[in-house]
Image (cartoon, rainbow, N blue to C red; front, side, top):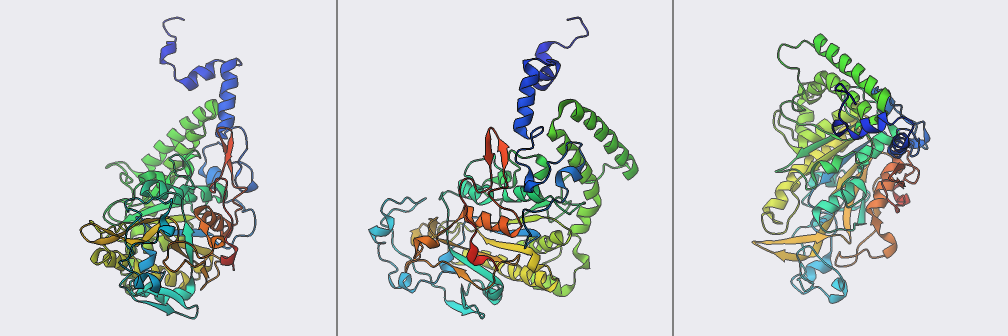
Amino acid sequence: MNERDTPWEELARRDFLHHCGLGLGSIGLSALLAADGAVAAEGTPAGASAPSLRGDRRDALQPRAPHFPARAKAVIQLFMAGGPSQLDLFDDKPKLKELSGQVVPKSYTDGKRFAFLKPDSKLLGTHRTFQRHGESGAIVSEALPHMASIADDLSFIKTMHTDNFNHGPAKLLAQTGYQTFGHPTLGTWLLYGLGTVSQDLPGFVVLQSGPRGPRGGSYLWSNGFLSSSYQGVPLRSQGDPILNLGSPRGVSRRRQRRAIEAVSELNALRLAATGDREIAARTASYEMAFRMQRSAPDLIDISSESAATLAEYGVTPGQASFAFNCLLARRLVERGVRCVTLFHTEWDHHGGGENLKEHFDRVCGQVDRPTAALVRDLKQRGMYDETLVVWGGEFGRTPMGEVRKSTGRDHHIEAYTVALGGGGIKPGITVGETDELGFYPAETSERVHVHDLHATVLHQMGLDHLKLTHRFQGRDFRLTDVGGHVVQQLIS
């Protein structure tokens, strides 16, 4: 080695492998690239050819044909972070009211663990009244009058269940199909399988509202082991949609375009030398950011929306809210975005900082009108049939009360409620019923797991959850892990 040579200790691992030529390093590099999907086409989305590595965003995110004809083109997730109480919203249990204050029978709690409750906790009936609504006769409580008015446009799964009663792992399971970090989310899988028709906005957008972000943070919209081209992009509803999106002062758009082109050319050279697909993703992100400098401000500029539309959603211009995000969700889907996930906190009503009286009523009021307005707006614009809307949280709440500063409910994973509508979902039906206390499904066969919900969402988007796979670390992964069945009762 002479003075001009780079010392071996300063070489990056990839450079070392690259300079090893046809030796063991080259073999190792080939194996690594194959495992990452850069060479092998294993896990090709939707049975199509694998995206190329040239760095052009259209290669990774170009629209691809589904496995079979799709009923929906986009998904809007209205995620109620914290776990809304199904027993105060959708699941009326007269027997629970009758036995309120009595100790729960041991037959219900034997062998069960709860986040905070003891097995001898007392039952808690709701003080809210329920009524049947619409031709479907769906049961909705007085806490959600606006959602009750669209009951015939929705369907309800009352026997959802999940595997973990802690918020973080349960949220991860609800979004990724796994309880641990590092896996792609539903929106990511949709982009991986179908690409996106949106050219000036990300294909997977995340919107947040409420007093804080959801537990789990950015892992809830992560690309996991898939290319970062597919990760969710959080947008802000106030100020710049994305921090630092604007051009630096004194830099013209033409000058910035030339800089991006120069960087892209350098990235292309590096990509050709290494085959690292993340270089292509990085190039795509620069290109997207450049286009979003014009498209994103236009997105959140709602001056073109009528006063009647703003009133229907309950939007106050310039004020961040779940209502504003629902309106943005419609505007995003109109522009070809494939998946929009709205996280709204706070639904964690234990009876401490958040209780089942004023705090519960407040959060219901924040989401009730906008949810109904979103469904009506999509219908009016002819978009509802091709947009799948999913409303629910990571789990539900217990039939037993939890006493802190006031009375609330603990986390419940055995049976809770999720609502779906549009996107080829049969309207006005209810899947499953719970027992007289709302603790378990009345029939074991009526249980619907999170994997089943994911399989159903993918099915409506034209994707077979068993075929939408990606090979990583020697194993074929999918959103539904090793489970999942399409809930056929919901399919119109």
